[in-house]
Image 1: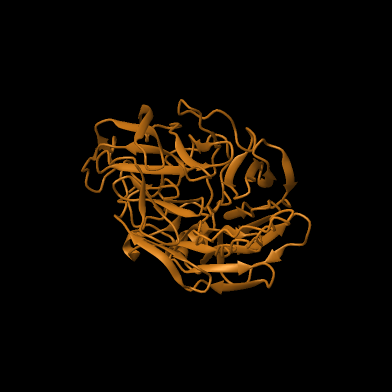
Image 2: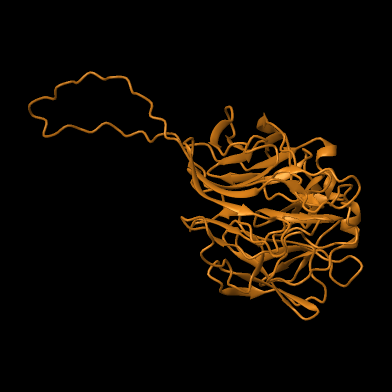
Length: 426
């Protein structure tokens, strides 16, 4: 393998280079060649027994209405964490994307409310590096959506069996499927990259790495409906500066994605997209810039806030912006780039992993309050709510899921091990 090359296969033309946490990269070293969710409540109508009609006396001026009994209130929605599990040899580094075969919906106490098993997503090999996939689990409308190895997206709620949400097909063994779900859970969009058979070149470097053409499909489907092809493009993932669309998520405006996400790497990168996403139009192309054209986006939070990196000379400026590009607040300047960042649903807090050997501790930065330093060894990934940061404790590839509560400033291990997929009914 080309060990001397540390660069992503697909370069980020708009963002600056990021210095990674050497300790984190050592723990995740590879042996490879290189919205807030909306809950749906169902109203149950209970038939009432018929009552006899008793005539009133003639002197009665009017009928007296029967007392109205209000229907019982539905039980409160329970916050459920989506946990993905996989065999240890199938998950060498979380930065490459979680590929599991077992999904669970678990409450904070560790009770499994529902679970499902599915076909493992085999990693495609299309270059002299390890393939990176985006989130294979999405959360919307009180359910977890996940894709299996055949490109079928399934929907799992707190009860009942998983149902097929969309079938984006299996265009050969060499494919990478990424998808997004609308906030109401009724529409899905997928980008599917397909590659030819890998070339056998022994211990050398293959150029090209695959035989046959490679394609990028943009597909859409309504929940449970047929799949419609939006576009099909011939691609060369090994070309310098190749711009290949990858769908990343769905906000109140519509689906969004980027053409400059990292597709593969010699070494696992820090968390975050480090790309320039925008909304995907009806023709399957990016039509705008989330966070503004100068925003190298790391994440779009559950509340729609965009966490941007604006890189300058020997420094990194991180800001929280609206989707339209208005800066709401700026994080204190740091001499070293952060290694993993996540913005809270209210947009008022950013959790980040700093360089342990430097002056940047791992902490929660807050817009209007002093920062909170993390207790223990913790890699922040996302926020379950405005007071709970979700991440991994110790070596992230081992799937030791942990929660950091900002109120008590306490780090606790989650009762069920695995990899984080989101929160249902936050």
